Image (cartoon, rainbow, N blue to C red; front, side):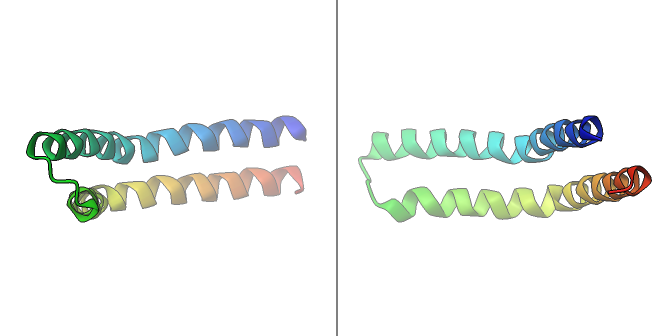
Length: 88
């Protein structure tokens, strides 16, 4: 039984990396670009750093949101089916 739960946990962690990876990568690049631009222009206003990152999250969420929801819902239905087979 614990092997099934461990397998589901590993699969969930891999799915977390696959689904969250693109968003985190885009945020990393945007944060670096924003930081370099703030350093070059010497503008240290916090809103200047937050607004572009927020805009990027919204845009990436709009483009990748359906794919993310589809992957997560497929995993959830698969996990529930496997757990019900094992008697959890």
